[in-house]
Length: 552
Ligand code: FE2
Image: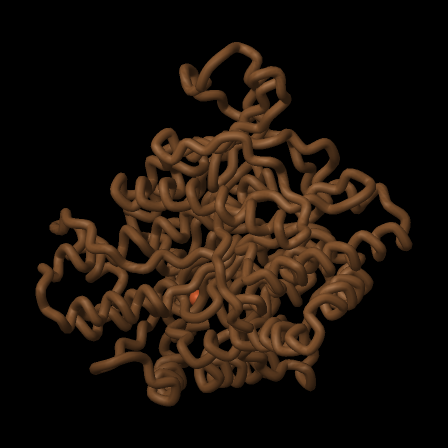
């Protein structure tokens, strides 16, 4: 329970945390705990703020997402309080509230946000009226992964801090699966493998915690960096219950520095679920015309962050960030220009590489990753990317020509492709041209999948349009597979990109894409498209089942 004033002062932030006796959170038990404590917590908050109940002007509550029984308890209390006081009721989105309290308490204005907790793992940024999701977990949340592992290892709840304490005493990196798909990630494989290693009993628990944390946070770092490079936001905000972790903070800081963005961290008091974040977001909403009539104040345990209008956020200007040049990082010659700095690699333009205009893709060290993990990823991706590009070309998909691969130097020299990234090109096209282009992109995606190639980062940033054909680039996360599930993830990444970055055209572009894709893939297309839809829904379902956020 929190109380905030309209000028952004937090007057009270009282908590009464439910701690499960053993195992994970039991939704009903948690709800019962909330119901029993709520009266007392409200009284304490008023006292702390030095206010009477009659001084309250609006009552805000969390409508979702989260555990149904807990949300219901909070909503019922809020409805009763608002009716009793005769003041308006405002239903707030829990995830938006984590971002807003982060902005308020850290001073960030228009950050790219990594929101990590027991129930959610989301990379979001404000764009065209709403918080858009650039990436999220495809299965469980990172906090949930740590909690479940901690429970298996007999560590106390909550798991995150316990694993962090253990990890401080670890030093050996045990190989564990690292699963990143574009800006999305997956933690179930990592959790399963970590538990298997635990049961085998041949590692020190400290080393296992250390490795689990290193891999999980490096994955978070990579998707965050990719989204930062994509959105070019001037600030990076870390919020949510897992935001207190020191290792994760250092990773965020390193990424922000690398991209010339300012890092911000939510203070520990507002990191885990708290009433102040709901109160403050309620004020933002109310002062911009949003209220929730009693008859529409039902909870929504699957309420997605990108379904919420955020009228209090004016369209922020998007300053072009200057890329910080690393002195001495220039590989050779003086005609080289650093043209982009991504999560995957730095791209250099060389005007005269043996008489050719080329792009040199260098997978530079990422200081936020464990050196062993970093080297393994960079070496593998360099060799693998070149191989997949050849295969894609054979399948009839335009890609840059590869001139040289240096797996030791982690460098690929490839043709400079003339044209504009589809992401930027779209805005200058007519509706008909846009639709034709997307049908063509669907055809090419079908060719890739038909040849057993999963792109792994299928977005409008990774396709170049030269006016004749779309050219696919950036196969660093590609995989060779014919599984419908993996094809579905690829399609999901493209759809996610359309939703976050090309929102006004999402319907026409999706339809055109699917049309082209079906033309090539025939019957197999239906299965992949079905999986894509299922993946969208699955994210919501799993979040509900595993949502450890006990508060609202
Ligand atoms: Fe939360």
